[in-house]
Length: 48
Image 1 (tube, rainbow, N blue to C red):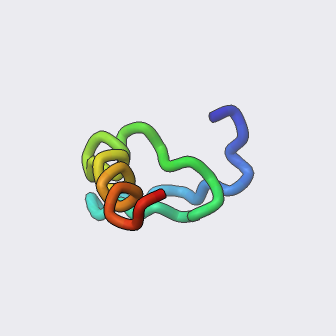
Image 2 (cartoon, rainbow, N blue to C red):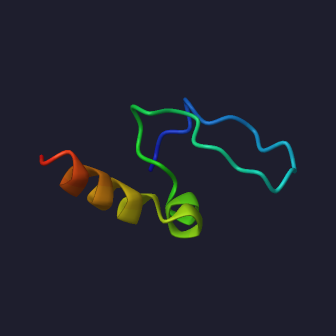
């Protein structure tokens, strides 16, 4: 992602969070939390 407009400085703690539900999550957080797998399962459960 080229724009850093909406990114905040990391505070040095290992507890990363997703800062926005409108912008894509950073790749490292996606790998760590497996958010993509959660979303796939959620979509199956709600029949979308």
